[in-house]
Image 1 (cartoon, one colour):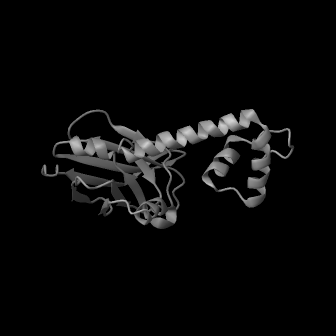
Image 2 (spheres, helix red, strand yellow):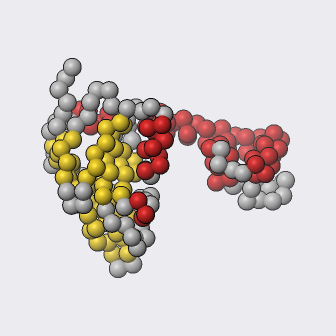
Image 3 (tube, one colour):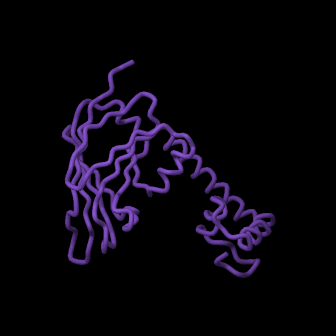
Length: 191
């Protein structure tokens, strides 16, 4: 625990690690003892549990578009999730679709990340609308890829279109494009 006194309350990060099972045994034991007698921290843990459920439900319903790690995708595969994956080369494109049985659609953007400190992504659809801008996204420079999960529910309803994604390295003097990727979406035939 970050706080050392029994009277002190653990911080949010400690409670989150505890809830996710990422705290070490000593911290877990200390939190178990603290939570047994602290109503305020128990309530905070209840809020974390509710938030976790809400995020999981939104993800399962295909209402989230997120950037994840390759390990996260591997864990989804280990859970038996039905996935459709598209690996897009640097400055390249891919024809894509989504099937009725798909639970997750993964876009793996192959991009050089060595020396990059911060990444942003922009996405523009040929259908018009606002540019979606994801700032300060998580990435693993050693992997050489950025992994996107699409809003599956929305994607299923979309007509044929192109989505252009730009990956931007953000530096002190501004941002610079380090790769662009085009997804050419074709709707699946109705069953």
